[in-house]
Length: 182
Image (cartoon, rainbow, N blue to C red; front, side, top):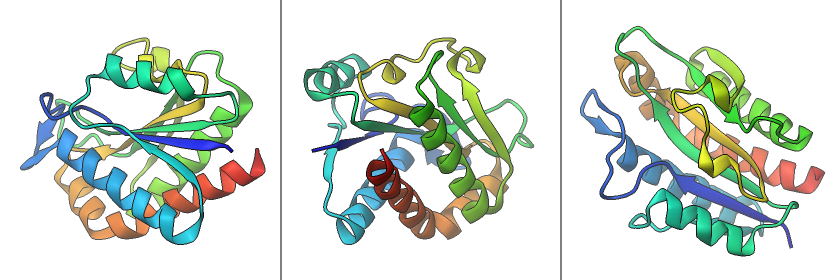
């Protein structure tokens, strides 16, 4: 049975980006929970969530023990910039990603932009990220690292907070439909 891995960027001992009164790790954990709950409401799927105490290396190792090429992975993040005006959502994929990763990422970015009402910065190769290579994108599963919005932008965060329930449902629907398609 196909599986969806939903991971929250940053663990309990690593807050990730901080801005406008928010911590990235808390936001990603909350959204992961909302998406998982919506998935359980709309579909009977094999859902795998990470442990908030595990480091990235531990999460990747656990995924690699069970993932197959039929599975999908969504890593949730919130972007940050020195400029408070930076805005939008971005979907990152591995260099040389399969078409199904590209399709998954494109639909997720479209979901966020449409629901939250922020710009769609598109699907980008991991080499366009600040890190250059993103380990979570290199498991057997088709994957996307989704930067929901800019934690450093008060308007992005205000809109996210208003629409997070609707966004969780849209992402859950995309996951369900993507697993059915592939």
